[in-house]
Length: 168
Ligand SMILES: *[C@@H]1O[C@H](CO)[C@@H](O)[C@H](O)[C@H]1NC(C)=O
Ligand SMILES: *[C@@H]1O[C@H](CO)[C@@H](O)[C@H](O)[C@H]1NC(C)=O
Ligand SMILES: *[C@@H]1O[C@H](CO)[C@@H](O)[C@H](O)[C@H]1NC(C)=O
Ligand SMILES: *[C@@H]1O[C@H](CO)[C@@H](O)[C@H](O)[C@H]1NC(C)=O
Ligand SMILES: [Cu+2]
Image (cartoon, rainbow, N blue to C red; front, top):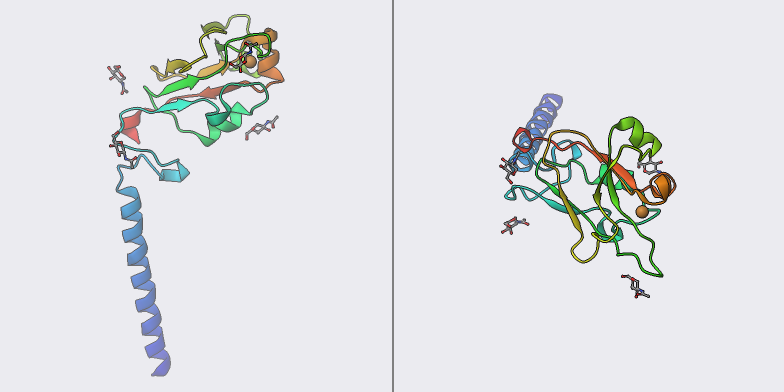
């Protein structure tokens, strides 16, 4: 009899815990599904698009791991805007730029031969160079300075494939 009672108590505890966790999960998922899902970084879902400074407070510079940054700041959505901030060159600062590489192979190899320059060395000053992810495609970004050295050695490259927001 005693053991039946404690079994009943145990079952009740288990049931109520699971009800509580379901309620918690609903609260968590009830934000439209755009945040928190599968470890995604929660976002302000009332925004239709986000603007992000590439590299955060590190801006666009030699030696910061932008692959790592892009993984930690994923996912990106269509119409999100990336902002590249880099000082215009002078006697003391090194120039940077922003190129779109053509394909994964060029991205892997930092091959700039057929790349498209989208932000030149003077465009990263002030509010920075802004680029909207308008299309559902992979974007391969890289700094084009020193014939790929900034991309290769300086880690100034990353890839993003923006998601369609309404699906998430
Ligand atoms: C979300 O964005 C809206 C509109 O910009 C703003 O009013 C609101 O305070 C934001 N909410 C959070 C939690 O940041
Ligand atoms: C940059 O970050 C990526 C992802 O976290 C990691 O795999 C890679 O080893 C890092 N590269 C360097 C040179 O630290
Ligand atoms: C992106 O923005 C344009 C206008 O700037 C709009 O026409 C288009 O529907 C938007 N696309 C998405 C997926 O939000
Ligand atoms: C070069 O640019 C940096 C960053 O904008 C600035 O701090 C520095 O004073 C500039 N140096 C010269 C010589 O203009
Ligand atoms: Cu650079």
